[in-house]
Amino acid sequence: MRQQGRGGAIVFAIQDRVNYGAVGVCTVVDIRRERIGGSTAEYYVLEPIFQPNATVYVPVNNAELTARMRALLSEEE
Image (cartoon, rainbow, N blue to C red; front, side):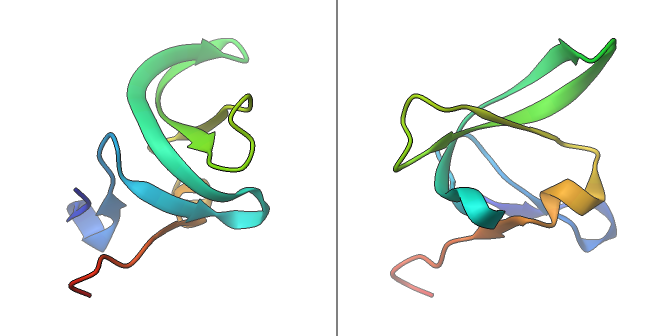
């Protein structure tokens, strides 16, 4: 379930559904530390709904990239 984090940023949780830019609707399948490109950071791991064999890694601390993760509305919203 998404929450407000520091500075008003939205923090996502595993199983949240988001719209991620041109990729489209994705499920947050994990949040984990990975070593990519020579540095270690925490990443949202997204699985695109319409491309189930693809995986998208979004650095949790990259405001520009996480801003592309738009929360989907719930039935209540």
